[in-house]
Picture 1 (cartoon, one colour):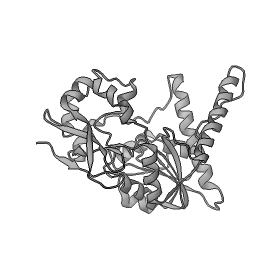
Picture 2 (tube, one colour):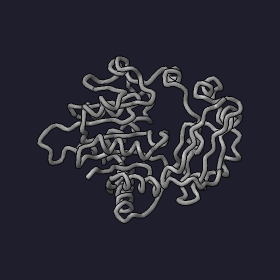
Picture 3 (cartoon, one colour):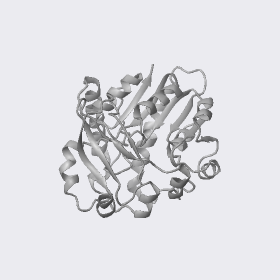
Picture 4 (cartoon, helix red, strand yellow):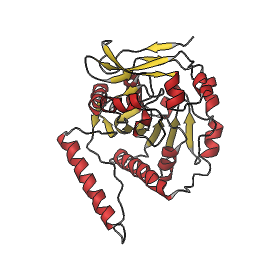
Length: 317
């Protein structure tokens, strides 16, 4: 029998809701092509369902009845390769992705170091394979902590696959002892957690006053994409609606995420995240477009103009 966790609205706490979309065994195995053995390891069976609802009071979308994961040891059997080791890039198109991550972490560290008379401390909350920690270490940060309580590799495996000097832990108590942190990154986490408010509050408590947090909140406009999701007969990784799956529990629009962040105590900054492009032959048009995009986004942030914002740098006052 499937075990479920029933949740109230992740923003306002209301239990008034309207069902919008239900994940079923058939949908996951035949439309999303999820391996049945993997689904069983995550607590699913042929009769399991999990429904995304819309809060009738604040309009937030979230999964109300989450299939409870089995013991972490069983789930970790799914994790066979976290990357690391040889981190070279064979596909040149992926350079821009790494460049964007490096630019974001560089900005975060520069902000955190401003006015400091000591070295700063960096944490990746939900560190995964360690990419962001490696960037922080390469930029010269002395204290770099990879904290991942979810499904990380063991400490020895993490050390073997990443730059030396990165402190790795699964335990919150140990992570707290390494802090407080001046710069924190949280990438691809908030959509997966059962209690995003408590997750943000935990990060807030780990940070020093005046510290900065980089966090992403994927923009998943279910109200607009629901017809395509309902009509889908096959969803591949390339499809825009591929981010609708059973491991995403929270579908916060920017206004909902920003409300949550402010209620926890964070201040939003008007940062933009486009890395610079060299003004060189063959790249001048791309450089100009990148500058215009940065200017446009910066104005939107400063004027409070709403759009499908996914990336934030927040400050703890």
